[in-house]
Length: 313
Image 1: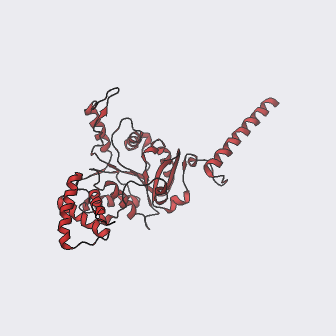
Image 2: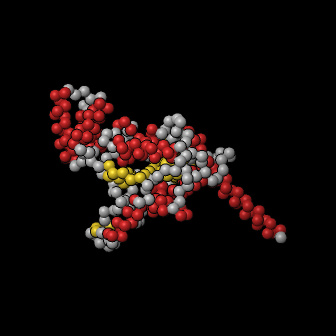
Image 3: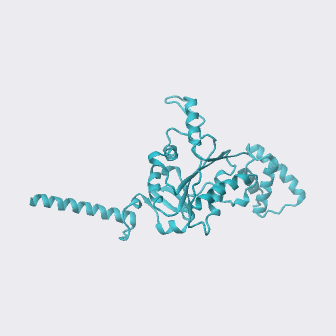
């Protein structure tokens, strides 16, 4: 019996030692913290309450949930920061997405949202602008936006476990998604939207962007073949369509008309404080259209790139 008790004591000592090491590693040796989801996802509860926009990302094997301003220093954004007033030609889409967001912030049920369309048409920028507009009182205490970076896919459920216990409401932003049978990011998203055991809690919805309306990949690569082609395209299309149907609101953003594109060019010229005479403006418009022709797109991104070229050294 004495030997058994001694063995139990030894095991307990080992467990205590491991516990303390993990505690120091994940909580910086702070005895006030306890090992929970923080052991897996590192975040600050006080910042989660104070900030409005966050990024969930992975750095050196560690999963981080940080305010967007702080996270962008470690994981720089790929898009541009715009306000809702900067968008031209999509007033109705802005109105409906804003209304859906307002409903959710007010504690009412709201739809998941999908923005799809060509690259550079402002899908990601629009969602970030919506988040920016809700990042001030009185909404900042009610609704939070979290950009989910793709390489965090395996930890999304753990993130949701943390968020569902909070009093705030959360919109998870999934940027640039597409159907890929091998993508964990896609599988996790589909599982959450399908419901069942992985159904999203009442305080979480999803805003997503995609270059494709039905989230379908253009083609698959057959194993051991150099060529890339469709494999069972009808199944692939049906799968992508089934995911798209999970979004209650879906909007397409297209390349702009010539007139709208030129208005966006003028907007960026004013935004950057470039002084251009009325005579020079005619030449600028011609050059802008030629630039768009070469780029193959009359998008907001193309307009901005053109105007940046006008800035003198």
